[in-house]
Image (cartoon, rainbow, N blue to C red; front, side):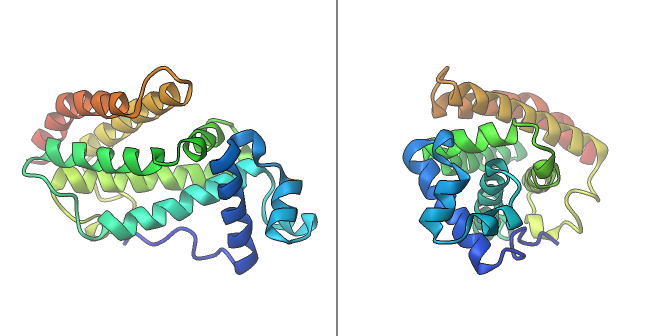
Length: 206
């Protein structure tokens, strides 16, 4: 089953994360300085370091919180759409608009994911696994909670298609974060990719 990823956060850790989110929303990645996070959250700097090794780790925890909300909205109900391509397009449409509705925060999250910080590797992998499960569920027309694990019972071709769609998505997000194009262009790229790739997955699972 798909379980929330942040249930282990205690009250202080959640306050630290929410403070970092507020700073990133206001002024972007550079504004998330651990000393400022500690002061604004009204905790000792040592408390921040005890729970998080870097600001990238704090921001990825914020991504986990957003992932929990995403699972609550669509993970257990399934994505609407008459065809697999339509459902996958709807999925990435919802996720992209949800992420980019707070542009400064979204750019900070993209930068954190791409940072290569070893402290966040497992959390980034968990996010990718969630997106894989949601994508496969959309292809099949199921609720993601119906899958036994994070995509573990899926067909190999479905996994490959989900992986490639995420690569296109992240590359488009990086371009958006760098000012190359707007959110609608991210969605357009994903639509083109889904229309080309998803039929291969559906033939494999038919």
